[in-house]
Length: 425
Image (cartoon, rainbow, N blue to C red; front, side, top):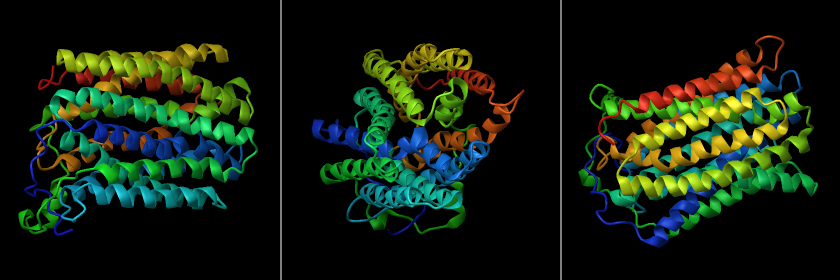
């Protein structure tokens, strides 16, 4: 790695579509990484915290763990993206970050698996979030690097489907392990092994971009740090896209982090029952998501439209949160899961393509600017758990109605922000 200046002269992104083999490996790696990253977010991290905490303290302890981890994700994603854009390794610009990130992230998950107390869980999740977000930044930069513009929405749709099917696979695996009486450590470790295998398969087939050390300007700290600011005045479309993603995922994070506790507290389920219901809801969500994601990506590429899909999908996701807020019986949750799945499927089918369309300097700073955009993924994971205990404490406590109502409102405001994007249809 020769220099870390934020404005190198990199080789141009390919002008032809990536081959089928690379696209398949790309989608598989995306799926595998998110199995490793999102399975703890959805269930196993909450279960691990429950093992080491008390019923009274577990919500606060989970907020601490996820909040600290999200802060590290917030820092690591744009930083790793900027460094990836400057990497002059013989392995290429993205490949080193794919490798070290998934391997070090796996170490963090292992720390959580064998942690004796909450403090060690905090350390392990900070390591995992830092490293996996380094891999995520490099992975997302491959979309503008390797995929032709005419295919981006379709590939973005497949990536969105992969990302959202990943926690289903992880939670399903965890449920199977619980049913088999396997030790709790394997619920964390097995998804991580899948992550390593998927990313290594992509590394094996990737024809990575190369950056010549002679093309990188000398490192200047001030300019490097300033490069992380993408002015919303100069790039308003990027700013509105950022706001839309941030607000939707903020609403999603309010639900996501506390899903297991919601099932236990509102419906009196024990841990295995709650995990089983979570799996059923995720199956419904994933089935609808698969249909919505496939149709949304194809229609977006065919019509050239992005915004309308993002707006409608965000409203659907908000409607799903409303159903969760007022559900009086577990069966009602199927409706919420279907609406939520339709919203997420259509959203992730198009949003990444929309962002790529309005990405500033995508020829030379794709990973850095995608990393900046990914702050909209990481920051809600930090802010939502910090706000959630206050919302849950409204009234007599355990107020999941307030929690999900706020999530729905925030998601709909995100849809409104997308309407202001002018550089995409």
